[in-house]
Length: 190
Image 1 (cartoon, rainbow, N blue to C red):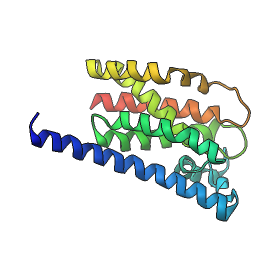
Image 2 (image 1 turned 30 degrees about the vertical axis):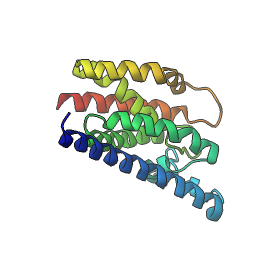
Image 3 (image 1 turned 120 degrees about the horizontal axis):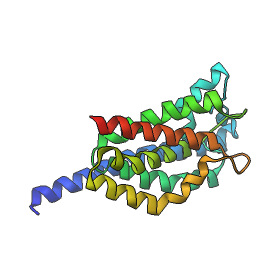
Image 4 (image 1 turned 180 degrees about the vertical axis):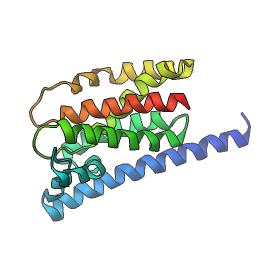
């Protein structure tokens, strides 16, 4: 490997770190501010199903969390799966994120249970769906290999799309996952 190739890989990894770090930093800053200043009020900006004002949550909900354990539980999978999404194309991360936020958010807004839906888990499930199915849609060895790795590491996530634990938005998980599948399909066609 030449020095230019090594520098290119290093620059690419720095870019990945800056993008993911910015998203995670924003999540943590919002949660710290919500805890210290707003006393949980910011969570009302989540997706509120079937209320017009609740549509704003499509943009805000991934950055809002119920508490620090909720945020901690979302931080590591967000970084790992988000990084896998941007491995081949950094632009994929932004496209997949946008599609998952819109599809997942609208799905929750239309079909979700009453009350605000918050958290980055919809994005996490979207990245999971994208990574699982992108290899199948594009029929490439690298894509299928990445799908197998993601399935091995995070396959247990799939049960989160089913109703289960009260207070956890399985609807956000389900529609986030479906948004990721749609993103995989759309990006495989280009």
